[in-house]
Amino acid sequence: MNAASHNEASYFDGGLFQYIGWSLLGLLVTVCTFGICYPWSITMILSWKARHTVINGKRLRFHGTAIGLFGNWIKWWFLCIITLGIYSFWLFIALEKWKTKHTSFE
Image (cartoon, rainbow, N blue to C red; front, side, top):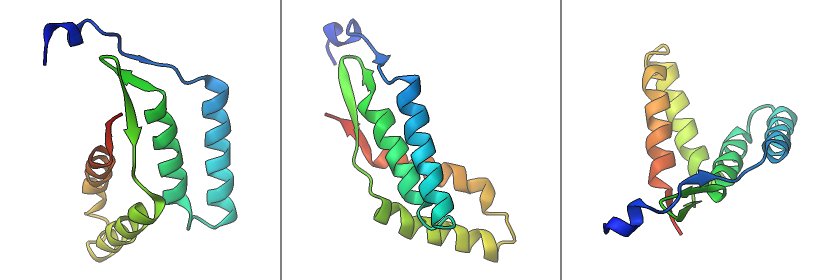
């Protein structure tokens, strides 16, 4: 990494009303599908956040899919059930790992 890249700006250019709109859409889809499409809601919001995030002059890109998250989501909830909720302590970390794995620079 060269010295010039440290001087480039990092910023978030998303707006409040955009965030509210995407969040309401995600909530609506989640409620109307009784939670089945919650992974779609998550990936939709993550994609919006990444599109509006620039780090050291490079815009982020989220390339995860709802189908990809859905498979993990089922596995993670199954682990929560069979461990009587103990796995839920690791669920946040598992989601962060998945999110990071599917985020890159444009």
